[in-house]
Length: 572
Figure 1 (cartoon, one colour):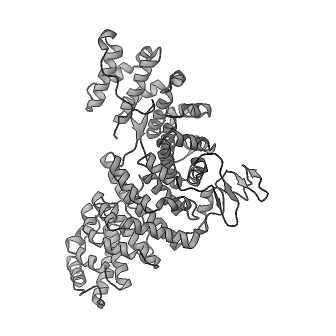
Figure 2 (tube, rainbow, N blue to C red):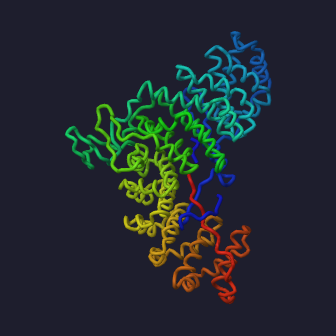
Figure 3 (cartoon, rainbow, N blue to C red):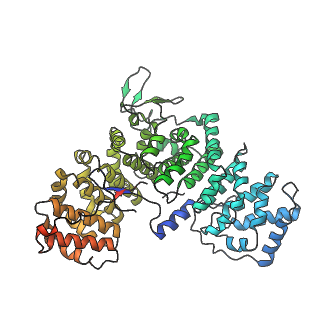
């Protein structure tokens, strides 16, 4: 599934960070491959694959005959001959291979007849053609998706049907095309894909009401028949939402909704910033997607809830305006058939947010990575939207407890990393909450025995906490300075720059900072970076060395530029 910087900006006296899509080439490729789905034949497993386009080449004569037969279809209204129908099925079969030879098929001229067949009036014909488009666009080569861009108008129009199989196949094809690049995404948007898919989801929600989960997010306030509130309902009446959803079988309508949400996520992704990002995402909100996403988090099928959370993660990335849109259309309570009434506490909008309540509940199981990671991304983005949003999330006592449990206990490194990432963002406005709830001690204990990517996020959190100077000594005296100095010896530029931020903070604000850095061979570690390829790294090292470890009188340093600002929040 599709789901996966700029360094400097000072905010609220602390470290803030922004996550941007695919900052290096390897991550870009991984994100692209994850954004596309290949469809196998009946009985084969669908889904994501490491696409290489390296399958066995097709026999030239057979491929040429197949393309010629398809090219001979007279019009969208003419019935296919037996030879033409056989050629279409053969082409689909080739494209359903685990590594289909897409390049060879397109070089043979198959794109043009496929575009025509998607517009055919016969259901079997346009369904098979849409299947072919799906697998052509599942290739990692943008040229392959571009070859079938002309199918988008027909694919979008065919989504408006009661035929669930056809709608699902067309949505799938749109999602693969939109995942290719910004050009393909914009082409899908210009064809009306956003309102069409939003209306498709809304119509299912409106007509079926989805039999929303007859359970509560555990634990939360439950109002019984007598109006009494309890926070610890017995297990036989309340289960975790994830446990409930994991027991439900996939249905055709549920699969269609999850595919549509996934396709919308691919249209919401992209390397955009600022006004461009906000304007693009405004198209989603203008078509009412924020009205249905909170309900879809409660869908009985976990695949739907997962895709709803991912779409919320992408849509909440631009910041406060997007977050306010996503959480503006909430109700104070939800009635579920044959279940208890879910009630919410707190005087402000966020504390009565169904989305916030359910998203925090999704963190209940630290080893359910599929649902935890997108939920963590959304919550991290909500926190970056402003202090008031973070404060309202922290009103839910489960949040810090679940985050601490995840960062310690999850068997999945990505879950631990994302949990530490959210903690690091909470540390900007509310470092005291982390200290008072024991999270600081957990982070310190993790440093010596966790994976590097988790360790780096933990270090960001410790830096953010230490930026509140009343906690600086507590952080430093826990022995973490040696870990930050060791990060200077890694090949990770982001980790090196973050470590320099912490070291400079200790030198500037701790009474024994210079001596501590010297005793831990910090000077040697920094000197090794003075020949670094990255100018921002070696210039920063030069500034620190000259300011704190040179013989230049302090008066001569007056008026020099202050140390560079700290990295910004990364939004997921």
